[in-house]
Amino acid sequence: MEREIEFSIGENLESAVYTLLAAKARGEKVYGEFNGHVLHSETVSMDSAYMEVLGCTKAEHDKQMEEWRENYKKEEKLAEQRAIQNIPKWIEKGQALIYPERYEEWEKCVNARATDLYHGLELDSSLEIMQALENGTTIEEASKMLNNQGHSGMSASLVRNIIFSFSNKGPEFWEATAYGEISPENKALLEAKKQENIQLAQAHTEKDASRHM
Image (cartoon, rainbow, N blue to C red):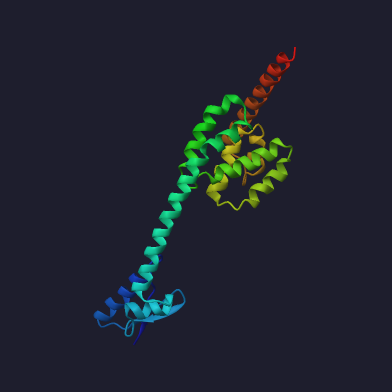
């Protein structure tokens, strides 16, 4: 009598076939469902399973995967090169939107983000929102911009933190885009950044006034 088995979570097709073949070698008749396809130990082979589930032989699939990996490496290399070339542009754009006291940290941020996972895409997103806020866009409209940028949870968090750290409206933006209740620790950080922004704004207003005296 044929018995149903369950493949392990995350098990790939090759491993599933080996599981069925091992059962057959032990004299067991079993079957299991893989991605909606039922495979039987009595009739399965590596290529028959690959043709059934993926529409190609294992060798063809392996070749496709190797080509995909090679293309992925090439795309990653090009993305890295583009990011490095964009570093001066990102630094310049950011410096036009932030207080001079934050130039050094901004340059460090740009260099770190340009060589990280997203190759600076979060810098483009942050600068877009920072520019909009500088032009008078409301916090609510800026929050919608973030939602429309198509972020993952990680990239959205990076953008929020960049804007928090450098924009003069960063704390307010971070608050408006927070999920759930804000912790007391984060409330304290938000208040400290707000006070820092007020002090910097006052200092630069006084400098501008002194130049025109």
